[in-house]
Length: 449
Image (cartoon, rainbow, N blue to C red):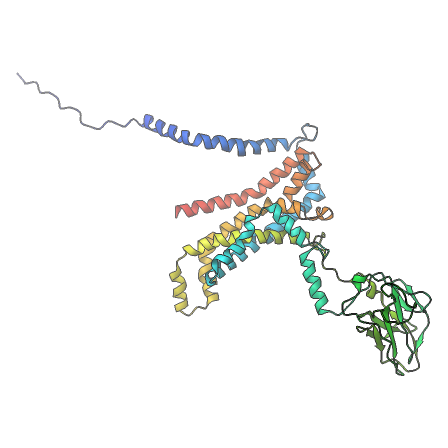
């Protein structure tokens, strides 16, 4: 009779409860992601979807299909905005990145690093609105208000000896007249004679500081005509009209021409501090009309119209570069501090100069940082609004228009066309998306290294 032997217990491992473990992991992940997904959906996904739907409706709330997109691409102001955005993308990010790279490299060579970094980065602490107000004030056309034109006019006046007397008129009944801004003698003046020009209606601030007491003209030679151009006014009154007397100032820097009968200029001169002039080299025995050209009586050089339609975009881009060059410098400085310096030292030992070290070693090692900075700035300039809205005066706003400003104008700035504004928003989103995707891919590549 065979003995009954107990079977050994089954010691093979049981399969794990994969379903339950996976479910718990998914629940944990969902509990952590749910708040972020809710916020993301409420603040990003929902507005995008709503804006996309709204872009197919007109001002009255009716469905208009693609009409808003057709209007957007057939509107002159939208074309100006797109053109300006292209200019922004080409100029501003590249300029900020290049300047940031230069500043970051210079920062390593300076002994006063902290002060330099503070000076360059300080504009980042100023709001875009305040920066716009600052630049609008700096670039005012009036030299008495705009510091840029004040400097330009000051330099111009320092290197030229031209003077302008806007509004000047000849004294009546002294043998000179005015025609189309030109002040000239009524009769022809023969060589060896004199012709004075007593002028009035000149603003006191137009008389240069170099002006002195008007003097009698020097005697004229046989091939000369002399004279004096003076302000025929004495402060406080008095004096005889048309005569050179104490208290009457000469007008320096006035151009004087001797004009032939056929209108050609036979000779020219310029008045001195006492207003006297000598027209020399003339034909002896000939007669000429002595004229003061109209250029003497223009408003003169008052600087550049920086805020006009011609220069307004350049001024706004300059203000953006002033603000964001510090951001690029800090980002690139961080990348510069992380590169392997032994490669630079090895290249110097091998005989490379500093330019070769910079172009062959430093710049290639910094290329990932430079790309991230550049793409970040591209995204930023595509959405530029504050500076473009604040800096241009009313007459120059259409020339400085960009997509973000156009979107605000047609939606809330008087247009009240939410459909067209939504279409512009979608256009802006489409333009920004490629740069965002490139940046995200760069971040993933950096993380996987």
